Figure 1 (tube, rainbow, N blue to C red):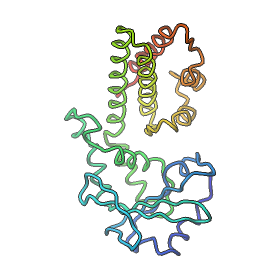
Figure 2 (figure 1 turned 135 degrees about the vertical axis):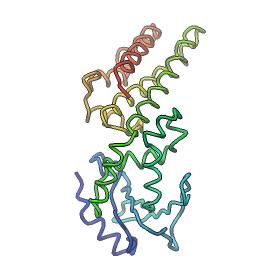
Figure 3 (figure 1 turned 90 degrees about the vertical axis):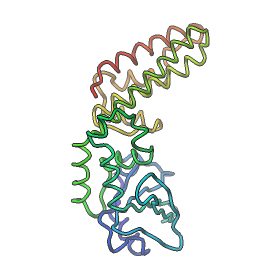
Figure 4 (figure 1 turned 180 degrees about the vertical axis):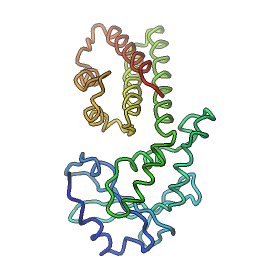
Length: 258
């Protein structure tokens, strides 16, 4: 794993760490040990007051307040992207995935935006630079919340929608579309399986990494990778492969518990 111990000092020297900062932590590929030479360093800072500077940008989310300040700096030729969150915003995002919210039956997409879901997921895998106790408290809240249930249920619903498309497309003779749909459905089914094991990220580019990390008995990495790379696909008989993967998706979905 990369040595990130000097990151906080670098930010402090540049005047980018507010005095009221409760926690600062690295997220994303560097936090997971998955970074490469072209990866950005993504960091979150949680403060009591909104961050403002002559260079900050702003992202907007359905929170109160809606603004999340951003900064981009380059250190030794590497791009660092910072996001400044208010503790009140963090509380709101975690509150959105309460069990009471889950019981409303609303899909995850109507409760959390993609960026909010990513924040919550990243809290569980981040590497604290300061405020480790604060981070651990938030992790405990997330673990006891309905976040897992939200993500699993949403992935299963997406997989089911794709499989419905597959059947309709095959019936109409649209084999090419059925192939694309079953591949999408497989991705959602795998994400559901991983989320049930506590691996919540949904970015397709990291799916193989996540499967290798978990190596679920229902879908060992080698089996997953054979499907992902379409190793057994025969262009002369596409329906056979499509049906096989659709059946696999159904089998995985039936075994996953919300």
